[in-house]
Amino acid sequence: MAAGFTVDIAGAEGMRAGAWTDGEEFWIRCERNDEPTARVRLLAQDGERPAGASGPVTVAEVEARQRAGGSVAHPVLALSETDGTPSATVRPEERVPWPRRFAVTDAADRPLCLITRETSRFGRGGWRIDPADGGRPVVGRDGTLAGWAVFVLTLPLWVALFAGSLLVALLTFGHVAELLAWSRPQSVAWRRQGSPPVAGRVLTFGHLRVGYRRPGREPLDDRIVYAQAALHYFSRMHHD
Image 1 (cartoon, rainbow, N blue to C red):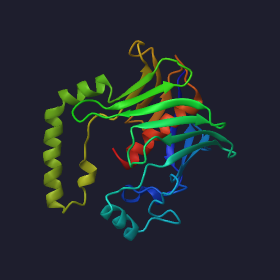
Image 2: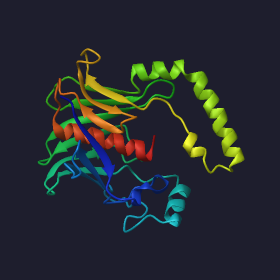
Image 3: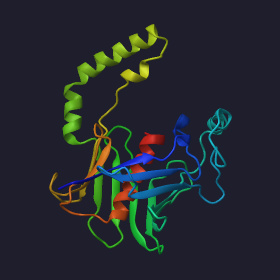
């Protein structure tokens, strides 16, 4: 049976204007369990202090960051058990806001994997996990093939809805425009490279469910799964 879990922000401070704060936490919760199974803490890289690092994000701090071009480097993600015992660390390999490569290590600083964010201006972006033990890479593409097929087939309807949302925004001065927003398919299915499309899945994200599932056919280390889910969640909240 597939095991499901969610990643949720522990507080509301980092939700404003796409900002994140040093020390902000995500909680990983398994299905039907309100208590967190693991924690993810955002830590500023050495020498970096994001807006609001010493307290809640203010409007002035957000505006200052925007004037600076949003140049604060991507945070380090520190994963731990619920009792605070460290389990893994995700370190960006570049000191930029949105790096492409992340080194994942265990509590003893031994390599677990390398996670790469694969971007594409016109096609499907995605994620790639290269296990440190030499196992087959795991690749996840933005939007499943079925999701993209449905999106293309219903494109005329989306265009009509988008036109309607613009009209509603004009009539209401933008107050309800966000309720009518739409976007490309958001679901992601990570699978072992070279495996069948369904049988090789190790992790999936469902946009409608807003959660992650582990099919269990080809299990992946919990620390790697949580590291990838945390990176994906952070990207959705602050970048995508």
